[in-house]
Length: 190
Picture 1 (cartoon, one colour):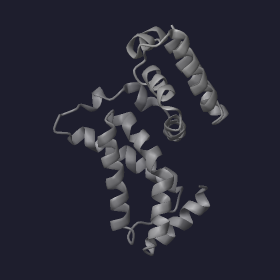
Picture 2 (picture 1 turned 90 degrees about the horizontal axis):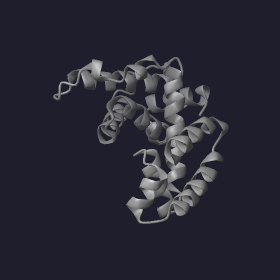
Picture 3 (picture 1 turned 135 degrees about the vertical axis):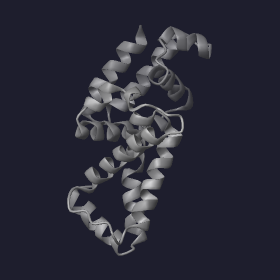
């Protein structure tokens, strides 16, 4: 969505338009979950905080006035909620334990990265089961091809074939993913 249509949708939400709210939710939910997870490193907690953000938006819709980018508003609200959660956590997670590199990444870069993560996740979910499993072991667990082969009781060549298929499909997303895939390929192949 562009900023103009986002603002129109938010004005419709202010008036109680549920379809506009659903459109906003569908557009930003997944990206906001990935974004929150960068801070919380707990996808279930991230989903919960994002859902609560949308509940609050709906419940306070008559009083919420956004005069800038809705996307920026949502991601800034999510960042603040994630940091507040860490600050108030019963686990007493220190803000100093938050990845300091993460805090130095420009905010808009983090938004773009969350959007890219959402696109990649959607594409990965469309891969064949075994191909997806191999890719996730490589990407999420950082396993080498030989380790994946042992774990799944398949040959290294089969792992390479599945990774080739996955990366070929994922490269079609956009040119922004090129560096991501080079990083994944180099890290996993060794």
